[in-house]
Image (cartoon, rainbow, N blue to C red; front, side, top):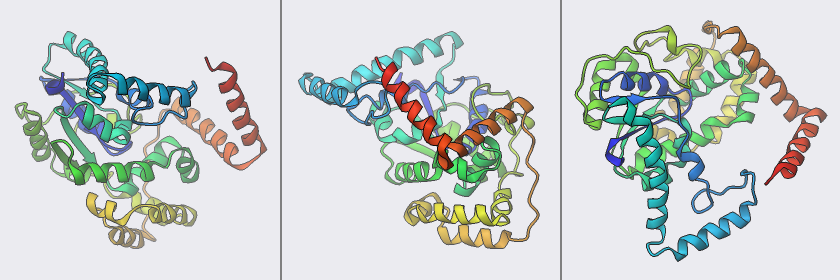
Length: 328
């Protein structure tokens, strides 16, 4: 399956659903909801640690390392076994479609790129990056009702994804094509042609068929083609809210300037953009479906409680106790 896989790599809220829809509408490419096949097998103990797994991670880590050491081919045999597992699932998903390629767009894969590159060094890699603060703004506004503090506490998305993506495009452990979201929406035909050439499929003009799966529940289905309206509205949303600006400044301080430079978003330029946006009107976000909005508000309230008061501590202890009791 190696030469029939396309991995679309990018952070959450970076435009991966948009590019996935474009790719999956190509007659040679089959796409579906994010399968999340790779992240679990990346944390079986030999590569990623498994502290959060619902079993004794110390025993498993020791056991898997001993097993790998006893295999005739060592790590190569272990990778071959994991690859066989993933191959069978990918093949089963792709075969009914009759198409050449299976597209796997799962943002969490960006956090296990060293493992993924070892597992599938010959796959087709498409990397999509977006302005870090645009990612954070979209993440907080879309999923956490605009509460940046809860969003960052729930998942420090920039601190996790910026270093991982920067290392991947800087070190290039596997051949890849790198696209910036801001450039994609300005000239979709040119950059989609680049993606098609890298993958090895004929460029067939702009793709407009919808891509069904996990992703943006708010904006992605509002348009039949890429639009530029989302490129810079993040700056006004952040710069004109003092508490948000302070939080975002702290997040920026935690990022390596070299990583931001690698991705093409130098820290000094980001600061200048925020400064220039002060006093600008804050754009109105598109409204999400009512059920989705209510679900997210409940999540925000629970997350805020977990980090701020006694109820949060009680919930955390209950969760830990249940994990121990239910562990098999």
